[in-house]
Length: 110
Image (cartoon, rainbow, N blue to C red):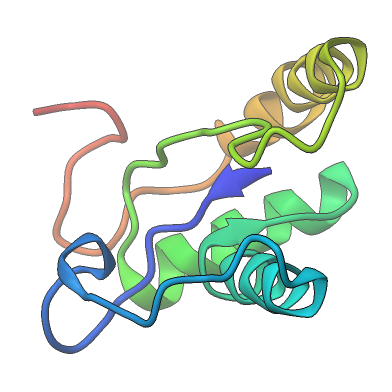
């Protein structure tokens, strides 16, 4: 999974306060995870992830990603490392072909 940098209105998500999730309620936990994945993650095949990163660069102007793997702790270590390796070997090289957002320099340039 890759944390998604989305264009939002209002304060950043980390500043918003929502109702706490009752961790003893499986449905509430499931709904909270689904919301997190829907709103803040890129999940899928390497090609699907690359397309979403490209779309974000083009439509939203995202020039940087903060990658987080297994943020919710639901995967074992071997699975997490395998996903990180797959991302490094297939997604990152494909992202080199994605141009910078309009009006910005090369990715990574400051």
